[in-house]
Length: 298
Image 1 (tube, rainbow, N blue to C red):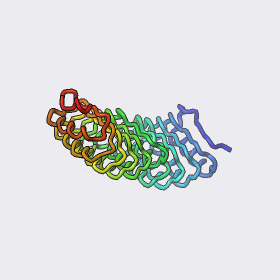
Image 2: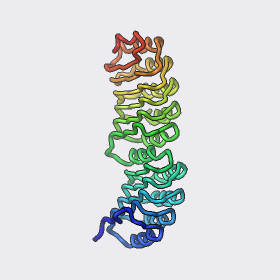
Image 3: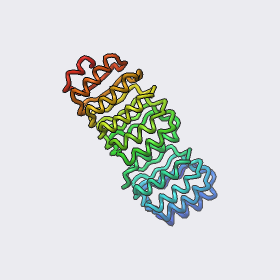
Image 4: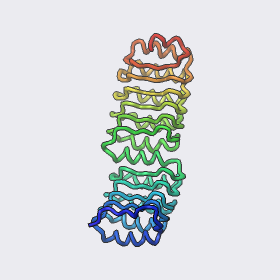
């Protein structure tokens, strides 16, 4: 009884070979893993495999990395996955998938509750990392930490992660440092976190968050009862942003660590923070070293 089929990779299976394999899968009731990576399967070959996925109830792992799958091919796969209830892992690394096709795939997977691992790295589309993370956040009920540090995530693709976080009840730590997230991206994120009851550590350092963006963060802190560590180091937060944070910290009794190092906060903003922090539960505060107002609080 064959349960795992590997083609030893780096073969020359093309669309016709994929058709023969798909025909065999129509009657196979035992295969759980199919590895077809490093071949020459294109959109036509993927259609044959996708047709089988529509009805297959045993395959849990499918590896199609390093092939020639493009826009039409990924749409075939997406349509097959709308109703598939068994596939747990799909590897599409190093193909030819663009952003429009990634969006199509993401939309198709919204109702899929079983796929927990989707590999998309090495495709030309810029949404790869965020969509992979979104699928995992939405369906993997065991994951507690998401690390998207230095993934070139920006305002357009952070929305995928944000949408997945809306109903998540397991993530306790989210690292989005060293990306390109600005005020629009942080708005998407904070909208998702308004009612979150599990996140404890949020790292947004080294992004492009300005005073408007940090106002969205402050709004989250207004009623949040779980975030204990907030890292906003090396952004573009000025005096107005410091004021937003100071206002919310007057009543927030949960936050323990706040990092505002290397921002654009001057004496006016630092004075507001210092006044609040004297009587606040924050025990670890890191601020701009250019102001003397914060010395008594650090």
